[in-house]
Amino acid sequence: MYLVKTPFWLRLFYPGLTWRIPVKEKVLYLSFDDGPHETATPFVLDTLQQYNAKATFFCIGKNVERYPEIYQRILQDGHSVGNHTQNHLNGWKVTDEAYINDYQLAAQNIHSDLFRPPYGRIRRSQQKKMQLLTPNSPLQTIMWDVLSGDFDTTLTGDACLRYVLYHSRPGSIIVFHDSTKAWDRMSYALPKVLEYFSNKGYRFEKIEQRK
Image 1 (cartoon, one colour):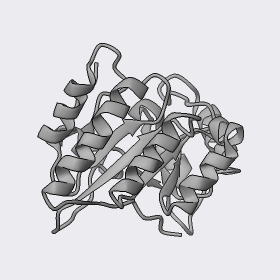
Image 2: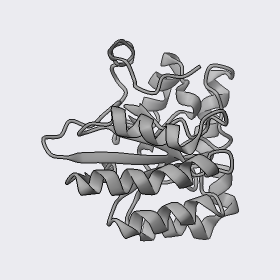
Image 3: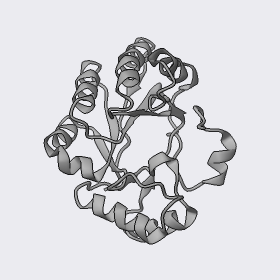
Image 4: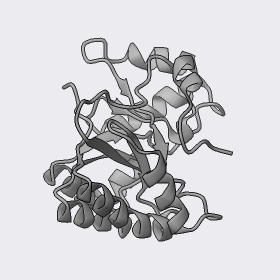
């Protein structure tokens, strides 16, 4: 079970996390989890380029090691990157020590103060301990305002598209996935999301790192 639109009460329960970006203009923040991927990530990069759009890629460390040239292209194209752990760990199912070690392993190749917990699952104790790792440059834990649902194999690409079009508003952080599992739905919905909101005068920006 998952919530397409992040409810207000959940943001209150995790006040130290970023769920959306306060803006006064028509700006959206696309994000992509689980890459780099040999097919999906180049498609995303090509599609973003067509609309002069920037995005944020939350990368899995082992995938960065497997596809370093694709990771470098993300950076060269001017997008932001964030840490998504080395092995896509569920914070609710592992010890704090194991979780932090996995984050640090990914950080050897992903140099960023942006972080997104896989599945959106992280204990408060893990969050507090991770903040202590970089006292001079506090970790930014980026969640989301809108889930496309592209990881859900029971959905159609059109359903994912409708989720994003209906729920997004200025400042929304939107989640897609550049992965094999999400490919069919993401590759259908993403171009249409970019076209729809571009025609309405929106622009797409990356989430900035502090360092």
